[in-house]
Image 1 (cartoon, rainbow, N blue to C red):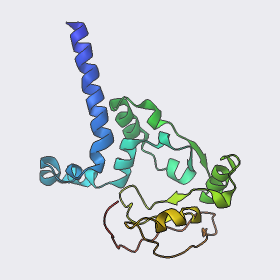
Image 2: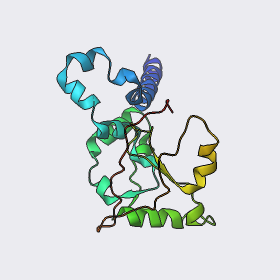
Image 3: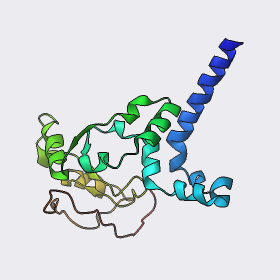
Image 4: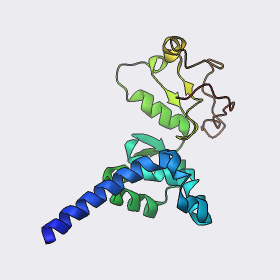
Length: 177
């Protein structure tokens, strides 16, 4: 009997992990009985940081100290333990500024020069309809009818602290990605 319960528990944890990894990115996350009837659940469901914690920062190689300082470790640990994916709670190398993180990242990609690097900058994981990409993508974008170049190319612009300015999107949607 103990073996059957152990197997059942493992299956349950696996299923919960898959749900926690996938569910926040589906429309069901916003449209369900609990979100519609309990204000505190609705508030949590709309929190971008909660969604990010579900997936885990451990997938990144480099980040900034600014982001690491915002981590709710208790929530992150709970989500990764439940999801049986402990590595997603690992904190990657974190540097003081965006500029330094980008310099280290570009310096670690081997023989590819920075101007040939394939860089994509997103506002957040919920808004992927407008992104900034490096010039290296130009021919691929022009070859696709479902994508358009809205402006640029423009250089990366940093503030006096060495951080990128917030990514401004135009709020224009063309199809879906």
